[in-house]
Image (cartoon, rainbow, N blue to C red; front, side, top):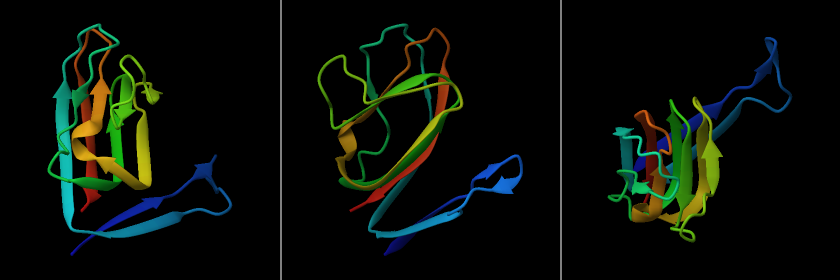
Length: 122
């Protein structure tokens, strides 16, 4: 059994935000960290899978990207984006039931982007 831990600390001008830090821990059978480059294609409808297909049922997913990106979970309708991120953006999904092969990202720019993160589950 693996344990995935995540801590979120929040401050405003150096002062702690009430209720933080948040600490999460999840036991899991599979974990897949990733660090990939996604080529820019200038096409808002081209989504490619993140390399998390080895995790059959994703219960937690976290990732950051250094460029603008679109994230789509569980396929969605063609052309739909679940979440549009700006450069330096990120996403945390906790307590989910996602299929690994259906976590996809879009790079609608001309430049390549780096995407880093992890998926855990069963």
